[in-house]
Amino acid sequence: MGKNKFENFIFSLITCIMMVFFMTWYNGILENGANINIMNTIITFFPICLIAFIIDWFIVGNIAKRIAGIVLKKDDSIIKKVLIMTFLMVLGMSLAMSFLSTLAHGHLGPHFLFAFRKIWLTNFPVALFLNFLIVGPIARNIFFKLFPPKPISI
Image (tube, rainbow, N blue to C red; front, top):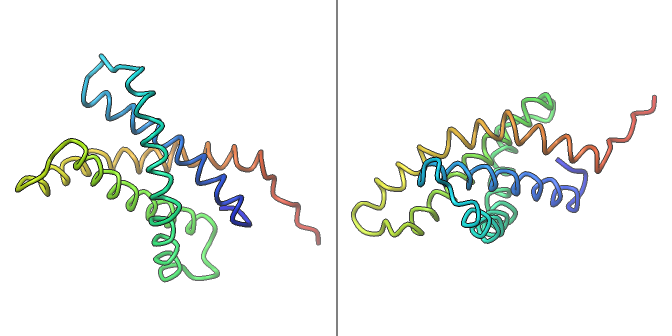
């Protein structure tokens, strides 16, 4: 997204904070219904956000960039590049975070893959929707307010 590592870091941080916030809230509602414990959500938000950001920045982002480099051509439209990169990031992050959630909920043993698949299938569509239609546009809006694109001179 950004023109350099610092700008990429800021964009990733904005996106990660918003995705973790919404997904923590969503999973809290799934787990507890309308009786979501706000304090518990706030307490779990920070460590989850830190873990998600580390996974995003050091693992998933690098893998997604490599795959996007194979799939995309240099002359592809910006929209296509954003859509492909967003899809790859959501796919990778939802797999990683669902894996960790499965472990955190103690689903070890013979039912691990079933529990993992259930958690991932519950989270992936919501994460994809959130990133494409809510978080992505808001994060880009915030990012471009912080780092306005330079006008093209002719």
